[in-house]
Amino acid sequence: MQSRYTISILILIFITLSIFYSSNIRNKDLNIIFADTEALREKGLSGMESLADNTIMFFTFERPGKYSFWMKDMKFPIDIIWLDENYNIIHMENNIYPNTFPKTFYSKTDSLYVIEGNIDFIEKNKLRIGITFNPTLYK
Image (cartoon, rainbow, N blue to C red; front, side, top):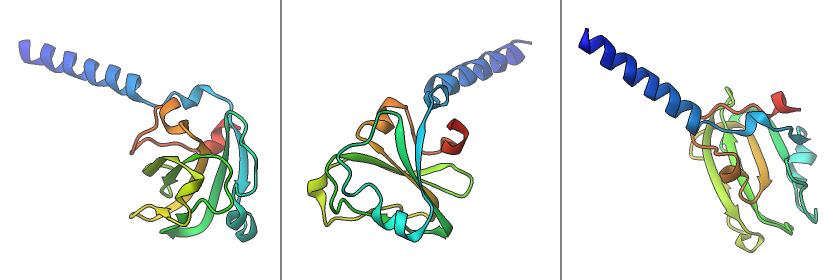
């Protein structure tokens, strides 16, 4: 009986921690700029003066691969998040500044989607590797 009680308590603690550490983005409205063509993906956010709060650029690709990003012609810092085909976060780079150009940023694991958001987007939304995040559900 004691063992069953202990297991129940441990399960409750695990569920509570999972909820506490899960992303809080699901409670927000997101504005999404889709980059779903070669031309849009190539341009990305370059040349823009800024990105409005709760706005992201969502890159979609035809097949999983190792997609790299750089800060060419960028005027503001961003966070970049790579997702697999199931929208699971597989890699993140935060606080990337324009002066990092020509350095490239990429995931060592194949991704199908990539998100660019304002600096601290990752931190503000408590994102972490393994979280499932499908931005199209937040339109």
